[in-house]
Image (cartoon, rainbow, N blue to C red):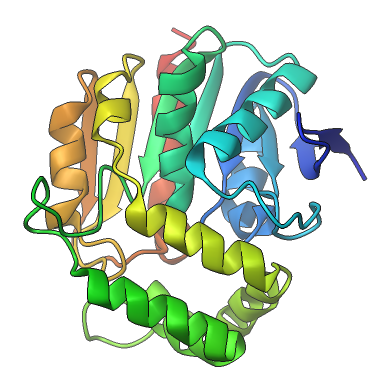
Length: 276
């Protein structure tokens, strides 16, 4: 299996499928690269080189004790980009991965990047603060972290239901998909799961988004209960100077699974724009 080594010696697993202009997929919490299955297969079959990797602590990558802050995670992405010498790449980040896209470009620049996609992304900020009065109260995140530490498997089994739901209409996916989610989540370490939750809860990306200058596509479900669009993406779309926002009416958080055909079509249309 292919791996690359980060600056602090952590081995990152990655898939590298297809040929053509590169697309790098950064997965969400608490999953791994396999969650991109519908997009990886579609994009590689339509003339793109698709790289998807497991974040440190997740999936087949090493599980170090430290390095779960966004600066280190963005540096890990940079290591992969340099290891494969990727040029004119499109970075696509889902949920937590959207933060890595934003932090990578503010920290490492756009020399290797032609486009960006934020899908159900946590940017610019989730937690309530003086600067973000409409955000989620800190007590909610404190309860989430405690539940993870007390009973990670039980918490994630409950969390997965809302992960795929729209508003209150019930699950849009099969029981098999829910079980698959649990399987992928179980491959992460407890330490990585908790510390990455702390990172996406605490990090403010407004400064990062203001530095994003490449064409950026933003995809988000209007009924996302994990990352409510009214406190995140609506502001992100205004902060990114070259952004295009598509909202999926009635859809929840995991649009890459529940709305795969539309997501794939929107991604392909956007990716092909860079080749014109």
